[in-house]
Length: 91
Image (cartoon, rainbow, N blue to C red):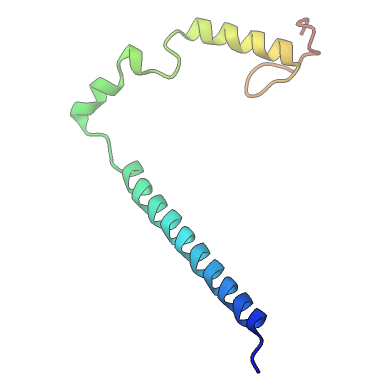
């Protein structure tokens, strides 16, 4: 006589493997498709558009520096600039 619980566990295991394989395959395919976009070189006629003032990461460099200084002074930590402070703003 066959054990029905054993067959149910086998089916669950196989279904889980198939679902996991399909998910990993979809993630790999998505990563390959998106990775292909990252290697597209910028053409010479596109560089002028990308160098515009409003395309910069921080359009106002003085405001960005002041915001960074305030953030790091209040947090008492430093990421990529300056020296570590005590959190009181008195570096």
